[in-house]
Picture: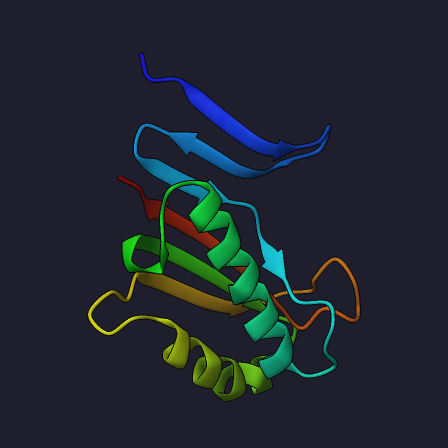
Length: 116
């Protein structure tokens, strides 16, 4: 049986869960900006840091789910996303509109990746 490793854990959640060679990240948000492009850049920087901590990278993305508070921000989010994803390494991806945990949040990014 493969072990499950949890990192940056609190009573509610773990930021990173590793099972075998698969890395699961908690949803990442960007809180320092008032526009979706800035929040997306911030969220993706958090994804980069967590993937590195887990022994992975954006070149090893498997699947991503992106939640937007307003689908009107789809093009602005995609402009940041398209510049961030390495050519030839696009994951399976879904994007939808959702009411996020805080009214100031405009985007949340959830990632699964391989490692090793």
